[in-house]
Image 1 (cartoon, rainbow, N blue to C red):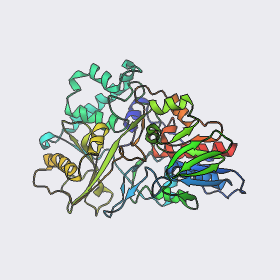
Image 2: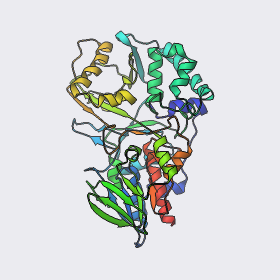
Image 3: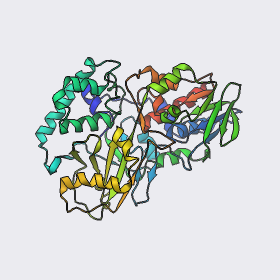
Length: 452
């Protein structure tokens, strides 16, 4: 399901957003290295935004060092292959391939992808009752109409949930409507009681197919990292930018640079784990506080044999919202792999982080056995994510919560004193919460420094 696709398709139509040839050339094509200059840049974070910035700066003659707190590069582009199949813990899809810089980048990096058909689905209610297609489609159509109008009844201090519940009280406890709200709003944005009732449709998208990585999204950061000076296991604790040179404290050491690009996730900025001297400007501090940080956790389960429908997506409408209600059939793009991928969102996602593997498997199997019967076996293996308690992210991606103003995304991207720069998906006003937004933000900040 394409991130923001359902909302944007039905609110404004699907715009075809194409990158200019110059941007594609600067962001995707290998350039001849420029003559070295004496300027030094430290990039904090080896996610896609930091690596994109570092690569372009190096190609333009800058002396670049990337400091990464973890023992591997990639940030939220992480791939786990321990079960013999690439399980992307963060980004999985290229969301709209036409004009999307990730499309070209993936080809250059050797990332293979498969088309995922949003129309290939089956939906079950509790007790394994197959939902009527017409009923499901009618509910989607009504949901589209509601999305078109709800923001007109909202307010800056009101959440999506507050306004929806007031306007449509009969739908609040309806299982199908819980599912639609969960998978089309909470998954895409964040907690319904926190999502802004006026900004839920913000953000742009690319047209084209929805394609999922089949050999691992980490091929992209691995490609971008080639030839870069990256220091792993270097946790930055302080950035002092009061003097001409910026001083970065990491693992008790202090390194100086002419410019610094901070690409850590919004959750890390919110945590206050990095001290800024002097304090960041009030506008940036406000933006860090006001923009929301969602949590989505992913779970990959494998079996010896498949027992589920031969569809790309299997929907289930339980009583509890945001809980294992959406299954991706991995077998559709890995024919020899018997696996399903499912999700937990928002508060329930955070709750899963305190649960054992056995407890999670038990909860998932309650849903699958309700659909397919008690005779289906337990999975042979499971992989999981825990993004909320991960000290390198403290959440999954940014969203427009109550109190957010769109200006806050630009405030997050604003440089300070011409030497402290910021990149990451949370700094892109059009493509926040996406891998392509993160990538474009890194190119943007590199261009700022080059222009200086």
